[in-house]
Length: 224
Image 1 (cartoon, rainbow, N blue to C red):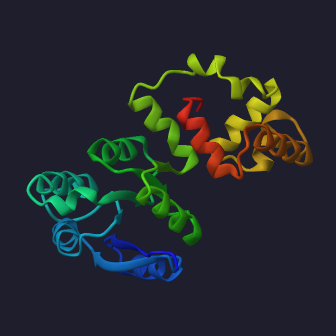
Image 2: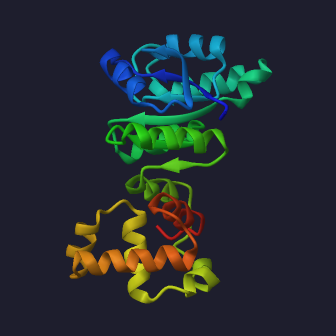
């Protein structure tokens, strides 16, 4: 039996917390909820979850929202050893660069928008708990820009990248950024079927299983 991942949900809208809880997979065990900064700090310290699903904009505290929760737990973890293992995944309606960067700088391991499905959130929580960084594909570029990632100079000589044709590289970058097949087809003046063929070839050549793995691959090589 798969060991459950203990989760705390922090969001100021109860209806969202209830809906999210119902959509999460059985591998996640929700051990607490909070609606503001102060409640979040209290619940996290009490429950000591594996992962916190954290909204960016929260009332309470000194007005710092999700980033304030992160900073507070980071400070407390210096005295409470158990808190050091708690990981945070931001889950917000906002896709603004400032919001993304602020919580990542404060210590979040990833950032999803609320357009994500329950299955996507469940998968992201498991990956964050396992040590990965996870982002909604369209947000990855904000993080790379903010933390001074290069534009792919080293990736140009990467053996794996060299396996892809120029067109496959174009398709790969757009898919990794979260574009739908139809959007890629329209942008590159291709048919949807041709895009599907390119994606299949990319995944096969890179020995990847899906677009989430492709995004992680592209991020690790600073290609987005």
